[in-house]
Amino acid sequence: MNETKRDQGGLDAPGGGTSAKPIGTGAQQAQGLEASGEQAPTEGSPGDGESPVAGVVEPTATGGITGVVEKLVFGGNGLIRHEGKAVMTPLVAPGELVEVRLVKEHPQWAEAALVEVRQPSAERVEAPCPVFSRCGGCQYQHLNYPFQLEQKRLILLETLARVGKLKDLPEVDLLHGEPWGYRNRVQVHLDGARIGFRLQASRRLVPVDACPIASPALNAAIGALRQMAREPRFPRFVESVELFSNERETLLSVLATKGGQRHVAKWFIEWCAERIPGASQSALVYDGAGCRFQVGHRSFFQTNRFLVDALVERVLRRVSAQAALDLYSGVGLFAIPLARRGARVTAVESSASAIRDLETNAANHGARVDAVRASVDAFLPGQATIAPHVFADPPRAGLGKMVVQDLVRLKPARITLVSCDPATLARDLSALGAGGYRVEALTLVDLFPQTAHIETVCDLALQG
Image (cartoon, rainbow, N blue to C red):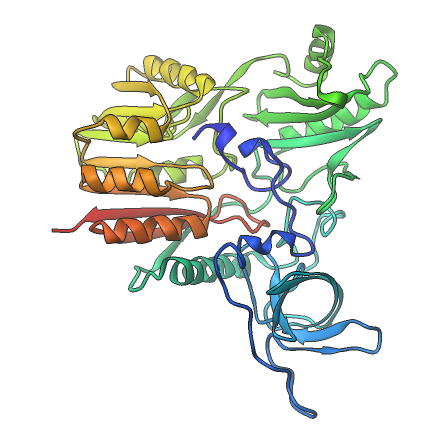
């Protein structure tokens, strides 16, 4: 998948060209409520003397409201109910009795800020990050990791049932790795001599010394930039920098400058390279899945350094065909290992940077990959036949109506779909199901621990 297509899971990830939406007061719950069509709740409040009822809230003497958190929803917030509305509150856990303060109301739901946890969950833990709850990168550091995984599984199943009306799905397998220090890419922001991430739901800077979900090399690079930013010659117009590392070298890309028109001089990049090995390079080599991938600074690559191998193995585990089509191929993370297993692979990618990397990677591995630079929307309508196994790793928007229609028309025997959004996955699976496909396996791959993001691998087979 091309980097310009997808949010990579918090910490102002560059996917889609925008920061990941910070999950703070509930603003982003349009994904989990309004966008999905969920109706406003109608349950009333408990009567006098009754025990607290999950999801129901009551006014407090301080002007806030108290209630028991019913569940977590996609996006990371907890759901409670107040006067017929769903109230979305961050930093809570199911079953907790909490006091919250309403901060913004919508027709069917409201945003709230957490005031106090009156009765904490047994799953609540002390967050190790000193800026957790302010930085927009993480939503779940206050929950123990096994509980995070279980909540994501429940959210995935609920979303598939509610949005896609999907029933009789297979059991969801879980694939996960080390929950800390896993990120190989971050985007940091600068304000004068300060460096850090964005405040939740704001463009204000939260200064950081290090990030507990970033890799050691990235934290070393952040430290180097922090020291450099204190020196007089540091260009004060630099606003955002992306760092991408294989732990030996770290690419540095200036993403934004004040006014958007100024460019950094060559000396600045060379100076960065003195402090950050690899900073002046345009690409690095990333080892994964038994291959060595060239990844340019404009190309997407999977962000979890601990799960690259496991993700590829999971995606390719049902390969049996001699020909395969890899849609949204990126630099060839799936296409190259597929070809090395003997398949003839056609890889479709729209990014010029990624397609160059893909061609280089195929040549370096002697892999039979036909790289096609095109959008999937433009490529599929011109096809009269298709490989028996299609792999697709689309952006957050999913496959979409037209791509699903073409796949149903072309009828590949198998489809393996990698999704980073449960709601769009539900929509795509529903449409593919109507076209004759059955879901055979579901795996939740936790590429972004401590965050609310959910990655899913789904195997489908054509029936009849």
